[in-house]
Image (tube, rainbow, N blue to C red; front, side, top):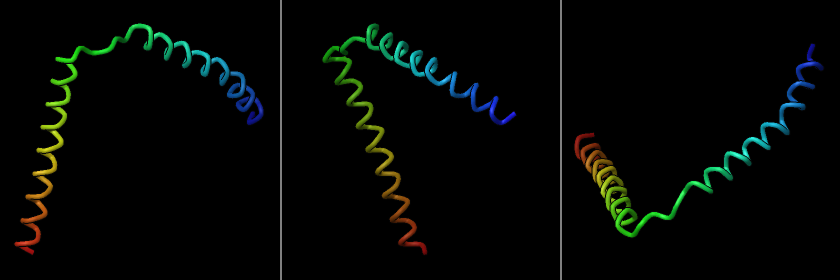
Length: 68
């Protein structure tokens, strides 16, 4: 039984890899470069999120130092 399972897995691998490459190629074909406005908006939102998480972490660190 173990040999049968191993054989099925070995036979399935090339098909899975081929399908993965096809899906990757499809994604690359349908994607496009974002405009400068879209890029800047994404950059602003991402920077704001990172800043807020960093500030929250710093506040928690300060409170921990002061209280404990």
